[in-house]
Image (cartoon, rainbow, N blue to C red; front, top):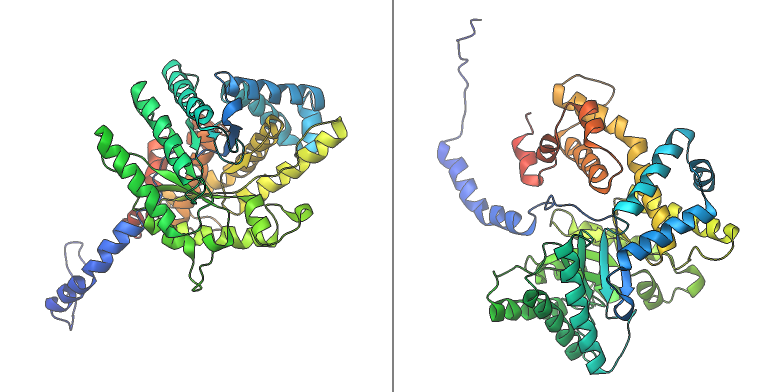
Amino acid sequence: MGQGRQENVATSLAGAVSEEISASLAPVDAELERRYPGDPGTRQPVHTVYVPADAYAADTLRTWGDRALAALDEHAPDAESFAAVLDLPDHLAGPVHDRVRAKLEREPIEDLRVDFEDGYGPRPDAEEDETAARAARLIAEAYANGTAAPYMGIRMKCMEAPVRDRGIRTLDIFLTGLLEAGGLPDGLVLTLPKVTYPEQVTAMVRLLEAFEKARGLEPGRIGFEIQIETSQAILAADGTATVARMIGAAEGRATGLHYGTFDYSACLGVSAAHQASDHPAADHAKAIMQVAAAGTGVRVSDGSTNVLPVGPTEQVHDAWRLHYRLTRRALARAYYQGWDMHPGHIPTRYAAVFAFYREGYEQAAARLSRYVHRAGGDVMDEPATAKALSGYLLRGLDCGALDIDEVSGATGLSRADLEGFAEPRRADLTVSGH
């Protein structure tokens, strides 16, 4: 057959059939576009650190980093001893230890939340007013002088009646203070805790709309995280998944779903000794959150452990091993973010994250390279898998586990190329015949 010859293809349907079907599905197309825009493609922090509002200071980030480094120096002063505690393979011992130390020196906290809720408690109104204004000033100064974490903000009190007015006032003071100090930073994050009903999410949306209108901000400028701490937030009285309705109630403003380990466990009657992020009740809640959030652009965060790495070295090592195991477990289940409650948790947070990406990046890079260059291999990957492989490598780059030179060398791809493969769901439809 000549290359210029075209086969005659027979069909039976008139063109109008396809047009009618497309017209009938137009509302569904619009609904998919609105509800499931895909991941925003921005950096997701590997953890969130909560600091009581009265304890937050200009040097908090550096203090946490220094305390984490001091814990390493005291309890695992070199790569071999740190690897022995965490049972790291020999080939990861040096790279993980060195990167953990460098991270603690350069960027000890990726996401910080000044806490006006459980970590702060009820205070006289004048005191909370002053603390909220102070938090705004310190965060604004940190962004101005380059000492801020990539993400910073507050956790306000919830929308329940006893503390609602106080939470609204604190948020108003904080946001107003940021604007008066120069504007809302790009890394601003707000957390709404103890959400039980979608109507509380709607109330938060209306509150932010009113603030944006009062200050002349672009509509939709301010987003927020929804904290899942009650059973009703997972399963409503009618048997539906409340958390899915909450995402819709946020009207595009929800940025994350954060699992509250201890409030949620207590809500279900789990005894204190068994309240942990790997309890079956926790796994159930997070699985519902994960499915509800998939494709929406809302990210899921795991909770925390309350076992602190303090005391004698043996006790610290036990706490480190627990935290490392729970973090690795969460990463394998695609919960790429969690809470850290103590500076001593930071070394094992980064050790777990860095080991997770470094031990798998060569295989991920090789699979992605074969997919891109159609080089075959023992695994047949599809566009969705290429998306997952690219996302994995990008997360490793964002947190400092990987360097762009080594990733590019292994894949032949630039960061822009990786971001292209990690585009939201809509892009998958265009590359299915890639």
